[in-house]
Image 1 (cartoon, rainbow, N blue to C red):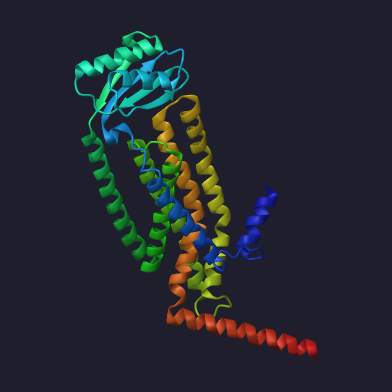
Image 2: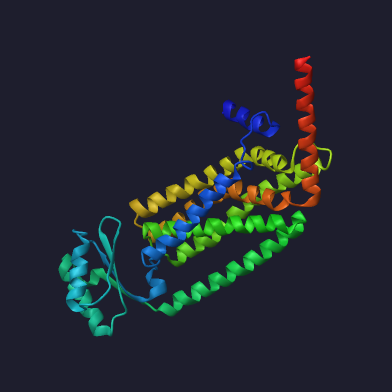
Amino acid sequence: MGAFARFGNELYTGKRSYDFVGKRKIWYTIAIVAILLSVLIPVVKGGFNFGIEFRGGSQFQIADVKDTNQNLAQDAVTSVVPNAVVHVTIVGDDAVRVQTDQLKNNAETKQVSEALAKAYDVPVSDITVSFVGPTWGQDVSQQAIKGLIVFLVLAAILMALYFRTWKMSAAALMSLLHDLLITAGVYAATGWEITPAAMIGFLTILGFSLYDTVVVFDKIRENTTLDADGASRTFGESVNLAVNQTLVRSINTGVVAALPVAAILFIGAFVLGADTLRDISLALLVGILVGTYSTIFVAAPLYANFRQGEPRIAKHDKRVLAARERAQTGELVEADA
C-alpha cells in the first residue's frame, strides 16, 4: 500500500510521468481499430443476437431435467415445426430454456410442449410456456433511444456550461461513443443476447464513463487555468500532468467498480444461470473497463488536440518551447566554457 501511495504521490507532483498526450496517435490508432472491429463483427456475423423480447416468439422453460443436451430440444421442436428457428439455453444445472419463432396457434404450442416433455422425460406440468410479442421490444428500444438522445444533449449542454468550452463537451461525447460502440461489439463477438437488461446496462455505463471523464477534465481545467501565460509547461503538458495526477484515482475507481460487477457476472452466468444478472453485468463490466481506458487515452488527448490550434495557446506553447531552447543553448555554452 505504501508503494502504491508513493507511486500516486510521484504522479501528482510530476516526479513520475507517463506521456499520454504526447503518444496520442498510438491511442487513436488503437481506438479506431477497436471501433472498426466493433462495427465489422456484427456485419460479418449477420447482426446482433437479440433476445426474444425484441424479436418476439414463444418460450418454453423446462425444469428438473436429468439431461441438458440441447440437441434434444432442437429435435423435439423441429419434429413439430420443421422450419422453426430454435434457440436453446442451459439454465443452471437442471433447466433448459427453448425459444422459437411465434407459433401459429395454441394447438401447435401444446404439441411442442408435449414433444419437449417426452424428449427430456419430464411431465408437461414441468414446462412453463410464455409468449412475447415483438412490439414490446420495439417500445423498449424506442424509449431507450429517446432516453439516450435526451441524456447526451443535456450532458453536452451542462458540460459546455460548466467547463466554459464546448471542446471539453465534444471530447467527452466522442469518448462516450467509443465506449458504447466497443461494448456493443463485445456483445456481437460473444453472441450473447441483447435483452432489456443489457439495454439498461448500456444506459448505465453512460453515467460511469462521463463521471470519470468529468473528474479528469476538472483537474485539466484547474491546471490550465493556473498555468495561464506564465507557465513553464505547454498546454499539452499541462493536460498530461492532470491525467497523471488523476491516474491512481481512475484506476482505483475502475477496479472498485469492476470487481463486484465481475462477481455478479460470474455468479449470474455460471452459477445461478440467471440471465438478467448476466446480461446487465456484462454490459456494465465492459463499459467500466472501456470507460476507464477511454478517459485516459481518448478523451484527454482529444481535448488537447482540440485546443492546441487556438492562437493564444499556440503562441503560449511557442514561447515555452523557445525559452527551453534558449536555456538548453545557454547550458551548452557554459559546458563548453
